[in-house]
Image (cartoon, rainbow, N blue to C red; front, side, top):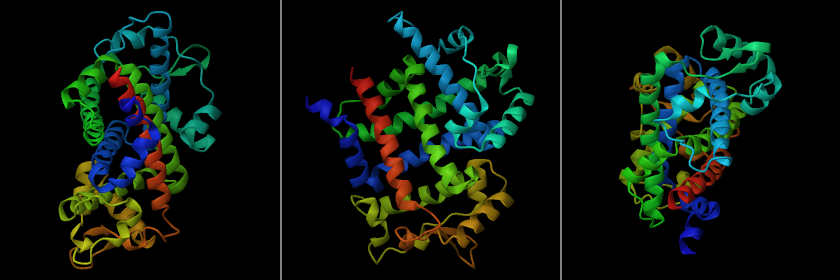
Length: 325
């Protein structure tokens, strides 16, 4: 019974909130890996988000095979056989728009581009679906393995705080063995997270760039403090800590994300105008303006943190319950 309570969403949400600086760096690293991977593969995060939508529904169709066969193999190893045997449902543009948060015409335009690039396929009767091509199998598996590693780290860190006896290796193994189960939920919550920020920022590249500044700040604070304070009080860090030391360059952000450096500079400067980030006039490096997190009307930072924790505590609850069964 105690184990069940530990893996409930509300319990995990409370833990993530109270230990924000200790636990959330692994989350932001996971998101950086995921979104950077999307950007590098598709060259456009909005198009990548559409692919996530189609991939999620493909994994759901695979998962439904378990309804008639409890022994059905959902593993990453068997994914290539599974996805070729699925008859994917027809999707309407308006549904793609609703699920991704993209305007209808933007979703239509991005879909046309994805079809031209052969990332999305168009079949009989104009049915549109995602089916990773065989020639991309090795690169696909490599990307997924990287994402499984970062996801396993995020889950493992939470497991330690919850006193669950889950090894990092075991978590990775279970995700691989029940890949479509875990990946359906993973992509489902990614869609919810990305849709929230799409609606708030109207620019997913800014989300990915902003993540790098947050990672830098949280890693800095975790080294300089005990890290056991609530995220609502990030603007009340000890006075002897100079947050300007938690800075990052446009070049570093470009290298991590794959976004061209001039684009990074332009969007970082947009964050500066929004008073979310400050730029040092001498070093040209950027750092978060923590003192304005709770009051900045341009960036819903606290609302975003609340939403992020809510979304992924629900996801973590599903994963941890799945691992404990």
